[in-house]
Length: 266
Image: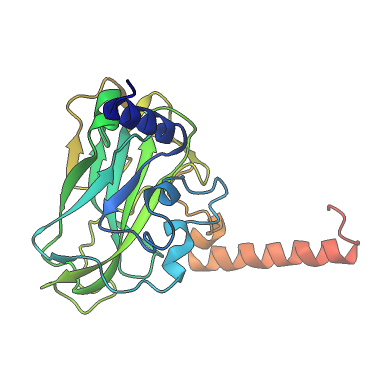
């Protein structure tokens, strides 16, 4: 007889063939309108054109979906029902006060984020992680980001964002009162920085709050290449002021010469 258990198992396997991972809490931007986890599970585009937040940071965020107290803790929950966990990997929980231009790391999870075992991802529906909110985190609206880098599979960056509110915090928004030691969120795969397959990504600057997976069978390894340059920021934009201006002037000069010669390479 075709049992309910068998039907559920087949559904899980079918979903596993097409779905990756998404967080279900805090609820990502436009999660409900766009079809939930199945829509949110794909990675960012390889060219970085939808970084950050799949581009939804540029839309109406709606009301905050959760409040987290400064000096307290926040959590995120990954939907694991029948998805492709790619043997787990490493995640970061990060926050932005400038509408996604910069993200600061709250906590890094190296290995077992999520669990990679087939039995866990097929029959356990979710996995929850906690992270600290600094006591002097600014009060107000912010973007929370969950990012994930897999152990196996294509080298890709996964990112979900949610509108949250930090309460009882310091400062007045922006970067006021924000700890100088907070590292930038790791950015990889969509730029010249690449992770190594068959290993848990060891973030170059994981921050002070770090959790290592206890059940992982994979080694930890750092990325290779030029790292932490956002895909939409050319390298010369990160140079000191005078050097950056000179580089931009040189680029414009080359473009003028190309136009003068009918677009030919010079």
